[in-house]
Length: 211
Image (cartoon, rainbow, N blue to C red; front, side, top):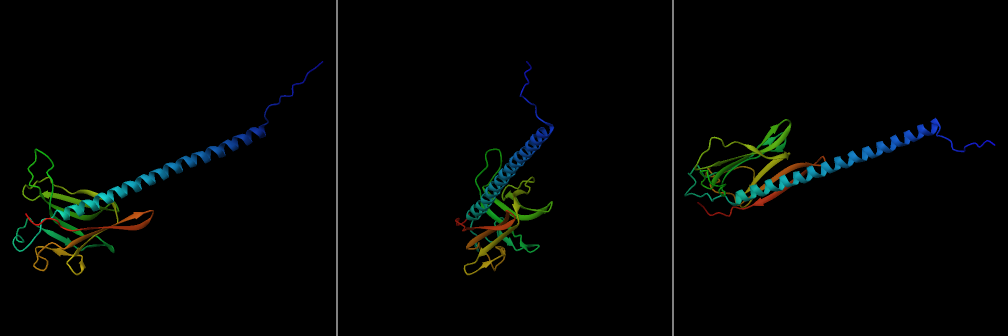
């Protein structure tokens, strides 16, 4: 008596179908994995940009708040300054800000007076705009005081001064017309978020009576 086995192997067509389905599934998983990675990187970059933006605005706000007052008695002291220049960069604000401010000492080993001259300006590098900062002690000059990037993800930088009745885009305490610090300072930064421009502003008022 002959017994025939009922177990059959896979046909070539079944194997091809299985391979195609496996390829489709693998491609879907592969694409989903990298989509998640890109979304994660985008969220991280957005968080880092917000952190950088918040830090920059808060730093400038605190520096102006710590700016010593300038009046007729000390206006001729060239170590005391507050200058805002209204500049334009292809239709976008690119203000330059220079001010004297009180800072905390960094530590032992350096000659520091606690009074610094700070400058902010927008520069273009590799088709990107960077907010550069330079800080120099007004009493102990250092030849190695160089500019460094304060904020790299930026589209425009606008500094406005309130004179008590209106906001203006230029100021110079060395001129008799101004002669003193503005009543308030408004800093506006524009950045790109999801391909669209977004503006953020902060207000500051000087809290120091003088040196």
